[in-house]
Image (tube, rainbow, N blue to C red):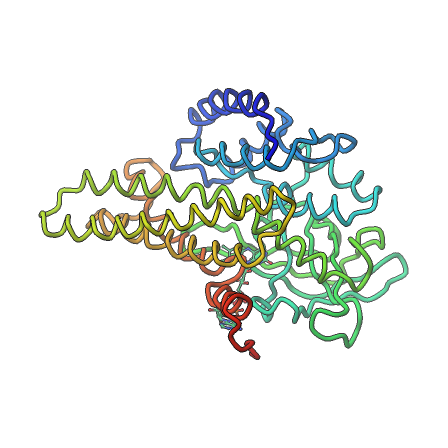
Length: 388
Ligand SMILES: Cc1cc2nc3c(=O)[nH]c(=O)nc-3n(C[C@H](O)[C@H](O)[C@H](O)COP(=O)(O)OP(=O)(O)OC[C@H]3O[C@@H](n4cnc5c(N)ncnc54)[C@H](O)[C@@H]3O)c2cc1C
């Protein structure tokens, strides 16, 4: 695999100084906040570190995929936050580069490159989640484009987004994955309403979007009308690849934090031995995740899609991560019930609580564990197909 080592060395230097500057305003326990992630996005944009593998004509650096992977790995190892527009960087942009017209690329890529246009992903609906092909949101032809009606839900960052890429039914009466189109919807258009949903962490990063005769112009359909499923499936593979990578790499540092917490915990020896055994087991699981990541990255660097390996990785990673944070919370003892507050007094317990609560979502987001098990069962083990 060809890597640009000069670029990576420069990037490492840049990361050291910029992360130090970021940490003066946002400590590591605030990495997940919108403010911190916005600031990190801005710094990456200013340093031209968004479009590493894009063609030069769209402002990219045309670096090989292996370098792109190594850069993301470096960011994750150094504890960099997830930039606020990562959905656009890692899912929408590669999809647009593959399926977009030259006009669409020229229209949408600059806003991602300079960080002025945030994107969200509009797939799930109140009645459509795991079975994505049963999309109910529909569009009908209007004089100047398409008129969209329906609802999307759990839409991450819709309240910040300028654009939403969404699956919409454009052929009346069509069933399942036929008759769907991949639309690029202006979130500031008339008829688009965004209602935030409060999560158990207390944050409100998710939203319900209501479309009431929202207009989408014909040039804002990616690919051919009615062929949205093919594009959504390609985008899902990108989601499994680079978008997912930092979260998996982060797992190793979370395991190290768990080990440190156990070493510091004042526990009777018998209890300590039980927890040490659990940590050892998690360490073994993390090693399996590491091997799967390496395999997936090799596939991605060779231009393949993660496929079944992505499903197994998502399954193992999300479940191991939940167990790591369960044990972290247990080790806190009575401090685990301290309510998060804003004065920083209980910063560590608060951040453990937050990660524990957040980790419950990991076995749901981007395909539930049950669905990943179905994929592994059907495609790898050859078990009978799920008819649900
Ligand atoms: C943190 C987070 C962020 C998200 N962000 C976005 C976003 O930005 N955009 C977006 O479009 N969506 C987003 N989602 C939604 C997510 O994609 C869906 O929650 C997920 O696909 C599951 O769909 P559902 O919630 O409708 O559950 P359902 O599909 O209704 O499933 C309910 C339960 O039934 C099980 N189940 C369903 N079908 C089967 C089956 N065939 N076999 C066995 N079990 C089955 C599921 O595993 C689950 O336990 C997000 C979700 C989370 C948690």
